[in-house]
Amino acid sequence: MQKATETIKQHVEREIFMPEIKGDRLYVALGPSQVRKRLRGMGYGVRKVESAGTGRALIIHTATGGHLDDLKALFRDVLEEEGTESRG
Picture 1 (tube, one colour):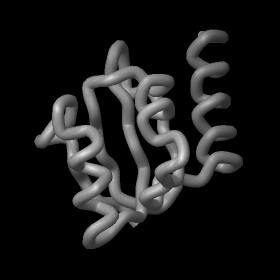
Picture 2 (cartoon, rainbow, N blue to C red):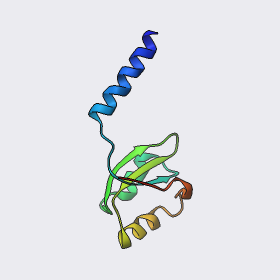
Picture 3 (cartoon, helix red, strand yellow):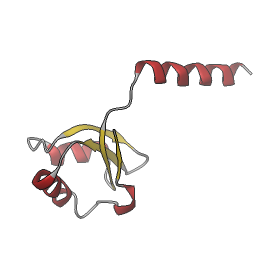
Picture 4 (cartoon, rainbow, N blue to C red):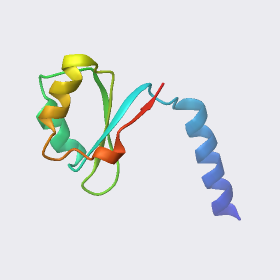
């Protein structure tokens, strides 16, 4: 029971103190550090890069138009099509 209480407490704290970042999501089949290396100096409206599991990263971005095309082109070899979704 103690473990379940701790998990609920962590979840509640996360919801209170870590609001969800607004933007579109793009999943790629690379680790977050490799994604950051590819993005270094580019920008393209990327707000955050997070781990989405082993060998997978989530790119939260606000890119539109040409910048979105450039961002997708940068990751065309590892882009996961079904993982693209919008929030915010």
